[in-house]
Image (cartoon, rainbow, N blue to C red):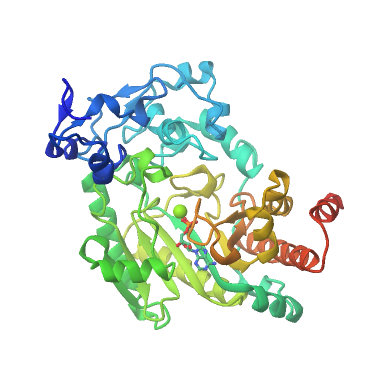
Amino acid sequence: MGGGASAVDKEQVESLPQFTILGGASKFDELKGEDGKVDLSAIEDPYLKYGGAYDEEEPKNSKDFKYVKWDAVPAFTENHKSLMSKVLTPELFEKLKDVKSDKGYTLSNAIMTGTVTPHLGVGATAGDEDSWVKFKDLFYPIIKGWHGYDAETQTHPVDLDHTKLVFDDAKKELFNKYVKSTRIRAARNISGYSLPCGATAEDRAKVEEILKQTFDGLSANPELAGTYYPLGEMTDEQRNFLLEKGFLFQIPSAKNLLTGAGAARSWPNSRGIFHNEQQTALCWVNEEDHCRIISMELGGDIPSVFKRFGDLSNAIKASAEGNGTTLMWNEKLGFMGTCPSNLGTGLRASVMVVLLEFNKLMEGENQEDKELLEQVCARYDLQPRGSAGEHSPAVGGKFDVSNKQRLGFSEVELVQKMIDGVGKVIELEEMLAAGSTPSDIRAKLAEP
Ligand code: ADP
Ligand code: MG
């Protein structure tokens, strides 16, 4: 494919801002001609398929990423599944197209990831705290669609009291049989700084600095005291160890939310992970949010994981406030962050649960049965994921099942919904193992 007017050599390709998105080094090797050059016109840029153009004026552009700007509603296709693509009418586009948040986040910025990554479910991101105000006409209907919560009229409750959870011995036994590990995480962001999709390199570095001080503040608590590891300073071995254990965030790929939103710019700078010595309390820095706090351990002892989560959450808040910063929070939206799906509690309580019967159906031929687990989860307000995170396959029938809602329910209520819902899913898994058919399960779902 070499030769021609737009043939470029490897060095030129590598300097393109969308190099990774265009397929990176492997794509280059696949396409290069005998002269070692690649004809760029042979590569379709996935970011330009929907009517936008690169915005050369955008100050957030970096060496590895350029933002796209739209002058009208993007050319959504039938592959666009997101709430954003449903909510964004031509009228709404007109109303918001010239709006800018305090930190300079625009409508095109907010809708970029959902446009260039059609499979996403939400499809819109906030670039700073003010985005939740300036783009509320876009965000509130999305929030309604995802959480069933009316941000105009409702207020959001807080409750981290682990003693309120109902988890009896029968549940404990059931969970210990099917659940390999438990994890509860939530997003925490620092007021006054752009969120990762809208951040400059300076913002990102400052956020990391504040969080490092915050982690130092945890050293007084023997259960939470630990060390911060910058991503850029890790060896491949260290990184792979943390990834395999499920401790570290996924490294952004060409097709995920972070990349399309510009939140993976200048990767891995100012990203990192803190964990306590036992590796049961962890904090991610500058991935999708400024900070993700995580409590996790092997097995299915949900109350224990939730107790540590509450301790970590309180300690981070106190430490941040001790450093003169506040967390993004208000009564309507609770904790605010990048994605509308993570407002409110920002809490996702997940279990890695082995569901061999559901997995067999998923690997089978029947389309309706493939979707059975999805349907079951939806019935109990749960969300299934694969064993290595969002959009990954379930290796060995191991699924990550978590609460779907984050907003309008307290932390205690959401963890309880997860416990009760996962209990039901396991019950149905046992019915399938004992010979029930998928139609039996569907009939069961229809019961009140
Ligand atoms: P989130 O962004 O909601 O924190 P992701 O789907 O991006 O979650 O997954 C992050 C990582 O956490 C992945 O490596 C995933 O395998 C791991 N993980 C999620 N839930 C559990 C769990 N219950 N036990 C162990 N690891 C988990
Ligand atoms: Mg994630």
